[in-house]
Image 1: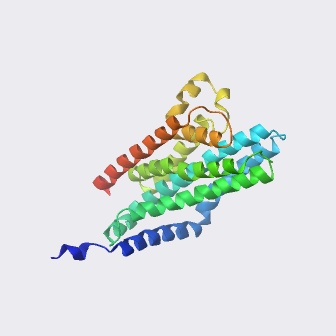
Image 2: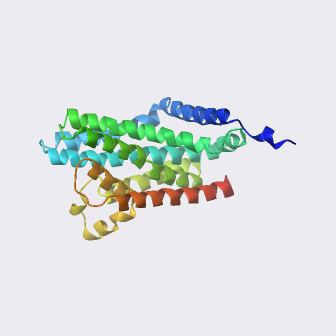
Image 3: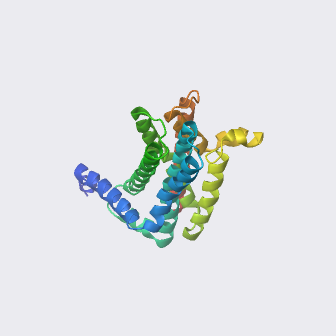
Length: 254
């Protein structure tokens, strides 16, 4: 057999990636029960704590903008990957997709682009509230930097969600992911400043990827957090580590 016949043309490869990303985004747009809580929760929290209870404190408005941006971008990665992958493994859809003549990375890239788009929307809505309602003093460069942090900061949580999705059956994934999502947000200082927490929790905070994402978000809105590259490298390490573990499980167990 001529092996050339087994090679998909580059145009069709690109088209397969685009089509998978498009179908993934459309699938979630048609499921408001999944999408609306992810988008609305961080914005509602920001209105409550960053606007109504803030008493016109500009510094607090910026601080909570960064914190709730970090909180908001965790969910698309964790739930968009974790729950959907677990359900698709259970239903056999993942097995079917792997049998289709499409690039193996198209399935994961489609989910990743969906998560990046949703995280960017969450960040953009929070910025609208911060600038238009809380009147947070932010420059154009800070706005763009925070949006970049939001869009790229979802990737470690995509990798973590992917790993959880390979470990659990479909019905068990939402419960475990909530047990990861909410405590991680609290212990990282996303709801309350770490300085208000016990010393032990302050010392343990750097073990969570959300802590490092929050440091980058605080830097983006103008707070002095010191060197940011160590936090970037830690998040990169989390992402690679979770992806390698998830890929190993997918190869073994499908």
